[in-house]
Image (cartoon, rainbow, N blue to C red; front, side):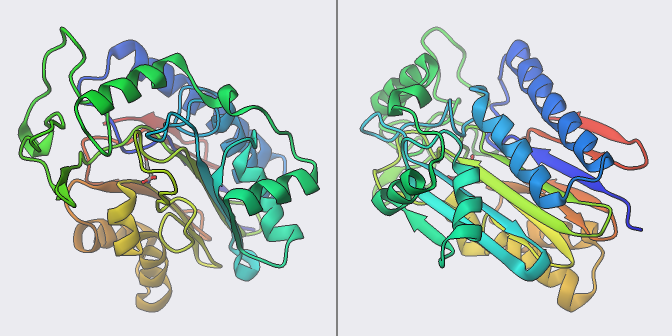
Length: 334
Ligand code: ASP
């Protein structure tokens, strides 16, 4: 019998100046979802059911950038994306550009289980959701006051990829070390993309990985993407092998700047290091973060079929937590 384990993340886009109350709120939500996942694994639920259930919870809570509370496109709408993968048989499903589906992760699972495809996007994904009878809501359900305010600030500072480090009126500008500067119209020393500044952190995408008592691994990731993103922009979260991956050996969910994660094929790289090089999960995560990922861009959580948990990031922090059958449980940010 294998020992179960679970890990959850709420994004690597941590503002170093995030108010303590908001840190506490995020910790509380993560701890609640983690406990629910651990309880389900304890009572024999499959890893696949558990990652879907935990991500649904996180989508429903507006604290994180997934489902309700999703980041907004530059048009002020929500275009969500999600993926799920079952290590057993390497089955997967993904959706992008979803705007009225209450729980995109469950739609991704339906793509996996009830469609002949792996990935549906925009109108086709919405049409499939209607056919499947999943719960649908108006786009306005996902839009929070806070995100409208954030979008306005992002637009004012002409940032493509907005994060909490754009200074709020009257607030101190964040520390400028490690590129932690506000995205200004002139670039402010930030990396540029097509002549426009990009900031390198994003608000809180969610993900969950689990291994159950039979050694089955599964992963799921869900996001609204990046604040002020172009319409139609697709990040790493729905891309199997980039933001999400699971096989017989392990399961991985990533968060951070999608463009960097995509070009690193980060989730699959971790699995490949375990499968082909025989590394332990912590070694594989360490190597992928250090050698494959651009500095300061992202993080990931992973579990292996042996019940190992590993979490790594090269950003300032990552909202994260894990629990194991041995009774270990931790929620952390920095
Ligand atoms: N990876 C996500 C994206 O680029 C954002 C995040 O992880 O917060 O869409």
